[in-house]
Length: 145
Image (cartoon, rainbow, N blue to C red; front, side):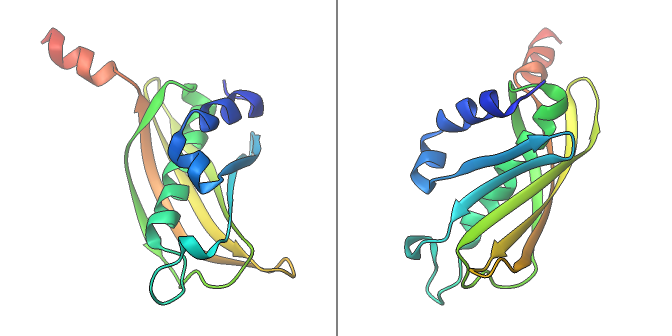
């Protein structure tokens, strides 16, 4: 239901994603990959990449993975993230998410977020799982009751 061109159009419509310089590098049956270049303005006081940046990557990658089954008109209904190690150094942050299960209006996805070093070494720094749902369905049902 979602191809790379459509996914990139949706991402480009998000001002926050443009500000971060986020880009979709892959979308396919095996999941989606979202990347952000490491920059000093994304760090917190100890020099690590801020957890909010990692959460952004998880949120968007999980939702794009859900869109593989549900289509682009969806929103995140919730996600959890575990920070596994400090995201320090590196040239790029990469979030790869896969679809776990999808129904008609709701889908669950998983995501690993890694720091890619200059030599190509990948270190997983966070893991997330989340749920996305078709936009507007829940509120219509509640109003009809």
